[in-house]
Length: 456
Image (tube, rainbow, N blue to C red; front, side, top):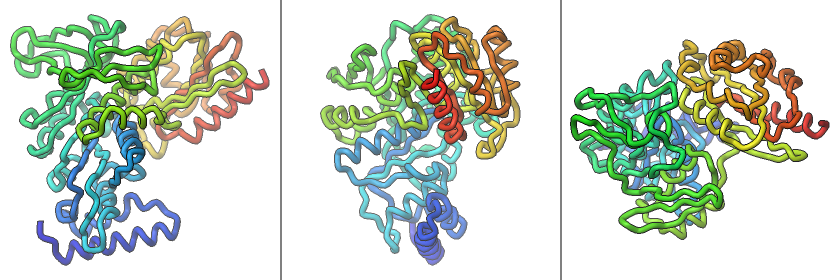
């Protein structure tokens, strides 16, 4: 695409703006790209781009997957550009490309790792063709932003360039069928002992065959619509998996991954099925980029889930775990609730879900709470649930609807003073489940909990 005077004005203005913002110690991850696109709307198409581009999208896990890919590549001395500290919409991607180019719009970088918001596809992919596009999963998300999975999958299918190779979650019947004309590589996990024949979740985003509308038959269900299924009347079914976890041992935290009849052993850094899927995604991408098993696994063992997503500490024999549980995202919340109920020992749960936070731009309604499996918290191993924050009364109603005794529930608007009600008798683990926009609050609550434990 031919560059013109508008392109250079946009590029130079964005470059100078970046320098100025850094001098002012301001975040320069969004504004330079926004400026460039305002001056030159097709800027992404005109600026030089790395030879290999890996784009990562999906409802859940894309940030974790990108971070792990980037950390492992860096550990193996790869040079690349990324939007790790920036926005995943068109302006953030533009800023990343600007940072990777000189004042003439040329780049000597050979690789880019880009997290891309699903809704931004129409603004990015007409001008940028990923070598690989990774889709972690597609679930119902915020009604305000993402409506329904069919809406999002259609956006992706319409806008993904035909030349792009897709790396898809083959256990997700929605994700595995986006952009059907594109070359594709599937990753997945073989049947586990914990998989069932029936779905125990409220939400299930694909029930009937998209080809003939016949009710699908599941060979096994892992959670929500994740599993293996087929249509009894036509040829629609789960795909054959290219990178398949054939064995998983959570006692020694290892998996066996099979590709082209070759099995390799990899270490796990988490026992949460969500993060195990993230790890399998990362391994698949890195193998496609040419890394071998030793390079990947030696670096993988050094990784940890970032503290804003998950952390655990032991204080005087009691474990304190913080876990991100996104408000307005019923699947993410349900997976965390499921993880909590299956965690060994007696537990207390502190629930800090605030979709009314200013940074979240407010929620239009509370429908997501009724797609979320609060019923998973109705478990004998959970002796107390403390709810606080802007949605505490909505949480209370939902917990009572889940059949949880009010004797187990403590509720209060103020998050910090609500912790005074924490009862530590016979408790082995305290879970603090927080929202994406309450990281500082989570830390304050965690500090208070740890002080209470020390004084107990």
